[in-house]
Image (cartoon, rainbow, N blue to C red):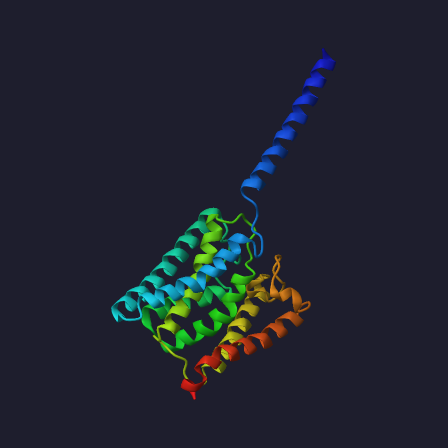
Length: 254
C-alpha cells in the first residue's frame, strides 16, 4: 500500500510538472514576449509618421480642423497618461522614490500636451528637440518586457508615439516654428534637467533617465561604453541630433 501511495504521489508530481511546463509553453506561444524590431514593433514604428502625415493632409485646407486635431492630440495624450498613472497606483508600482514620472520622456510628454493646448513657442521648442531626438530613441529601442498587444504595449506606443506624431503634426501644419537660439536653449535646459535628476538619483538611489545604469534591454546606450562614458557620449550625440533637427528651420531662424 505504501509503495502504491508513493507511486501515485510521484505520478501526480510529474503530471503537475508536465502540465505546468505545457501551460507555460502554450502561454509563450500565444503571447510571446516583445521582440525588438519584430512585426508588432515595426508596425508601430511605421504607424507613427503615417498617422501624423494623414492628420496633416486631412487638415491642410481648414484651420478649424487643424485646431480640433491639435486639441484632440493633447487630450488623448493627457487621458492616456492619467489612466496609466491610475493603473500604476492600482498595481502598486508607484512607491516613492520609485515609479515617478521623472524620465526625459515624461517631461517631454507633458511639454507636448501643454503645447497642443497653448501653442507656446518655448514649450514647442523643448518638445521638438527633446521629443524627436529623445523620445524617438525610446520608440526605436523600447524598454518593454511584456507581450506585444498588451495594455502596457499600447500605452507605451500611444504615449511615446503620440508625442512624436503630435510634434510632427504641429511642425508640418506650421502651427509653430523655432526661434533664434532655440537649439542651444533646448540643449541647456536638457542638461539642467539631467543635473536635477542626477541629484535625485544620488539622494534616493534611483536610476531615472538611466543616468546611473543602462537599461536592462537593448538600447543605443549599449554602444557607448560603461558609466560614465555613455552619459557623456549621449550628451554629445544629443547636441548632434539637435543640430540636425535645427537644419530644416535654419533659413527661418536666421
